[in-house]
Length: 434
Image 1 (cartoon, rainbow, N blue to C red):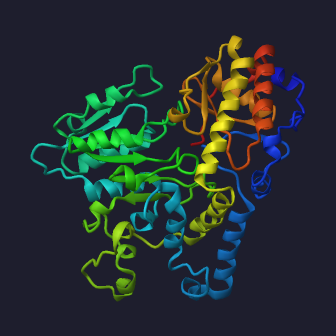
Image 2: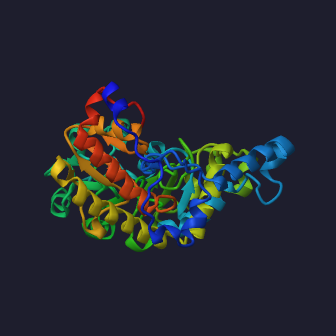
């Protein structure tokens, strides 16, 4: 650590303003976030920053609990009883989905389990294979393996992982090659969490469904930064988290999508909150399922965990909606690519994110053999990136609060570190954060 400590710290604030950082509504929306003057935060695809709006929503829920106790469930405009439904309505334009197809509940992996339990049929006479990819977040693979075992299937035979040619990205033809007549379900990530590749949801969904295959998507790394049209694309199901680009807080509840064609299916995992609201408190032994995706609720919503999401989503609308955020995100990542090409090319960095706008999500991944130490050295210099094993440095500018000047300054500091070898003073150890 001593060598890094001797490297002169760079100025905290970028000294090259950009007119795009001075425009509205960006200035007003950025002011809503607790952005530190001591940092350039480029890890919003792991955990988004706290906004004052989310903080206020949480505080209102706490005050309601303090003031109204049990009556907080039914009293006033902030009543808890339909908080999940109000949030589903706000999510609808981000997902291109009717609100009845959205349930805000559980956690990402739990929601995948619920969707599999509801939709996967182990008794199909010819189609029992699930196809996923070898690059996806491991938790999805764990869920698929355990679910197949629970349903009497051998994961070695019933789970097929699409290989990657370069260990970074997927090719359409490689995906389609795996969609044989024995496949019942295809599950893919919208954005590959390491490389940042954005898959073509519409095309893959259409081609898979033409072959009689059900299609699900893990939207954890795209919701809030990439527009979706789930209803129009015919997606069967999807699931996601809210703590990344949507800034709902660490471990915030997740969400799921169930296409209307599957409404009325008995929930695989039934619970009392999935009962029709008007019958929920009757406590009948038979499960009278709610309409739409709401039937997939299980237990009582965690109100204090949900509350920040309601406030966080207000800022999406004030920023101009998801289309405006996507436009700014693409501009930020393009500026980042340009700065990397200019400053880091000769220093051993390789961009592994596809460069085309239609094929990249909201973050840029740089491969470098010393990526872990570079990540730590950047943090020491006031820039917060992210490392993914074995050699990826991820930089994720948020369209809600990251400035173009921040992007340029972060690359400048990274260049100085690489040129001076300041990262060599950092200990090499694996990260413990998710």
